[in-house]
Image (tube, rainbow, N blue to C red; front, side):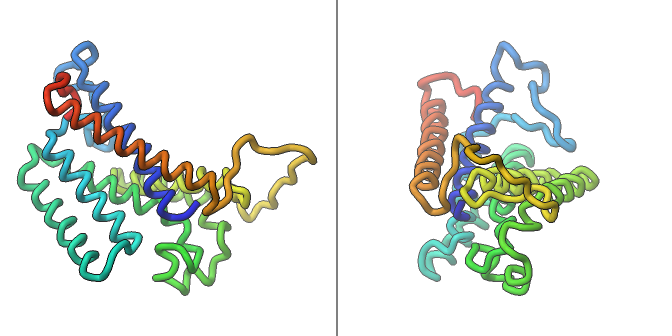
Length: 244
């Protein structure tokens, strides 16, 4: 997949998962004292957010994606950067506790992780800025392996960092998605790739930049809109706002 599809698609899954789990954790029939929250390295995932906190979070992550993919003119990118920093500062000041800002930073690390494996390509979002690395490493080799996933997960576990854990999760999703492409990946590189039997096929494959990837990208955008619509619907009294 192209970098934008990796980032937008993976963030759509994270967006839906965060909203779904937060709504579940704060339901009256399952909530316990202090919340039915998932503890990850001391962070309670699932704490409720206000509509303002959610809006700031979406704004910061959206600006980060626009900056990441150089969308807009130089002045517009500068405005995006100022807006992102201002949004984070505002979130720090108005939020009740550190949870909203922590989740926002985790999503930024997650988004970065979704494009990090393609640092081995000179045409990728990151690879064009670190050409010594992108030229030295053949595309979809060592950076697209289980070994890097295990290393990233191990470092996150050792340091007990929720940010590195988010980065590792985004990294993993990237290579899982690439494994369904026509080119595929070698999970255990440099171990030789097993030959598939004649006539065998995968039920779903896509071509990078092709129709299948465009469908995935558009579906991810729709999922983001649905998630935002749910929050707006919940916020304006159409139902009790258990999430935000």
